[in-house]
Image: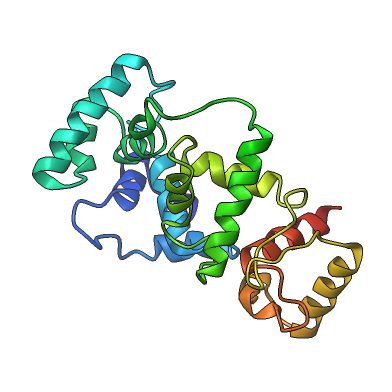
Amino acid sequence: FVQEHNLDDNQLDDLIHPDAPNGSGSGFWSYVACAVPQRGVKSIFYYVRCAHDGLGKGGKWGPAEDEHIQYLTLRAVQKHGNDWLAVADLVKRSPADCSDRYRQHVQYKGTKRKGVWSSEEDSQLLHVIEELAREGRTDLSARGYWVSVSKALGATRTPKQCQNKWFCRSQTLKGNIENEGKTRCWKYEDSYILICKIASLDLDKEADIDWKSLSNPSWNMWSGSFLQRKWKRLKVS
């Protein structure tokens, strides 16, 4: 896009960070989205803006910065809610950096555990996810899902820690979670069923697959996000 439109760095930055809301009407984001059809425009927008944010490459956070952002954030929340632009201006980090650091680290200070999960924690994680499944919450990609998991664990692990742990151990922790909380391990025949289901869709683009629709009453243990990850692994295996 830069070459086709002969843009310099400042012009590119204006497209990525327009002064006015909805100010980039050049077709830039649609152009970029076409190159990565498996990603949504919102996801691409967030990634590109973070990658091209001059404040977004500040290196490792130090203890002083954590204390500073905690103090500033508490003030900002009391006055304006989560005003990450105001916090970023004071901390000299990008708004996304400040938001992620607070939500994943600072607010869990004093309760967060690090290192290897114990067998007791593994069991607690599985129990919480099965309880959420019984409540009808089976979409692991839903907004706030892993925050709920973290809270149920007493905030001893952050949402990101819980999410990573579950996805890394999804097979040994009895696979995924539907059918009223009943679970089982993924088997070789499940891979075959998944391949057949995708082939039967006869779609031109993988991005058009509705992963949630692939389950049925006789094969309903797996969420859409789990099936999508399984398919990605099958393609490279």
